[in-house]
Image 1 (spheres, rainbow, N blue to C red):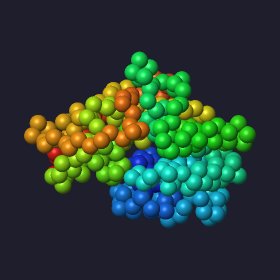
Image 2 (image 1 turned 90 degrees about the horizontal axis):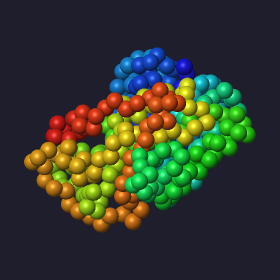
Image 3 (image 1 turned 90 degrees about the vertical axis):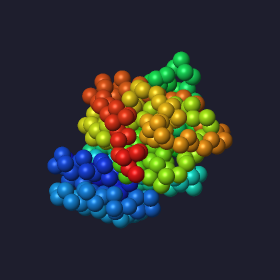
Amino acid sequence: MNALVVGGAGFFGSHLTERLLAGGDTVDVVDDLRSGSLGNLADARSMGGELKIHTLDAAADEFHALVALRTPDVIYHLGLLPPGQPAEANAAAAIGSLMSVLEAARSLGGVKVVVPLSAVSLYGDVPAKEQPVKESQPWSPVGVRGVISRSVAELLTVYRERHAVEFTALALANVYGPRQRPDGGVVGAFARALHDRVTPMLQGDGRQTRDFLYIDDAVDALVRASQRGSGLVVNVGTGVATSIRDLWSLMAGPDGRPPAPSPRRPDDVARFVLSPTRARIHLAWAPWTDLAVGLRGLGRGDR
């Protein structure tokens, strides 16, 4: 299979690139390196195989020529909203980048587009009795990031209906793992605090819950989505809720200093966990990494 990974030099994209190469696929990475790093691709570059890296913005005119030249079977778009950057500053670029990918796929024909979305931003604050969250749950976007996520899902549907561009959108839980930036998620922030021996900041009282998904499990869902789940938004999570304060306890251990409280963000969701039922049915996917196992090497073992 020929795969093109937009945002392939980032946390998520670099792990996906390694998985694709290990499976014998030809991989083209497209990344403008605004938030990604070639250092993230060091392992991928040492694996051999068919890997080409293009320092390029997916919204640039040259992207269409690249797609026409490389004729990918699937385009993974992982670079919509860079981690640690305000969504407001990147909203126009995100939509422009997606439109460029969709137009390139339409022009070439026969190209599937796979896009991960932030599930918590898309679904918003769901009542506890309606969790774990299923795909039938109405979207209630949180902030600009959530609105963009909904717009992305709707644009994918439009291009499928009008231009026969196949897609699968994965509504992901909180993905974590090696190479995650400190501003890329709470696990990354806690890992950096432990590494630097500093006290981390805790949003609110830390009782809010999240569904934490290990990067290898998330990548496996992405790879399966290249062949399955066409035309669907599929939730990808563990079905297990963990509070932020319990996450810190797992990472820091019994001797860890308590995190410093800070005001809770006004758009912070109180509790969130995803149902993986549709993923099991349509992707033949299930999570396999226990949170305690996935956190090894990211907390105390990192110091």
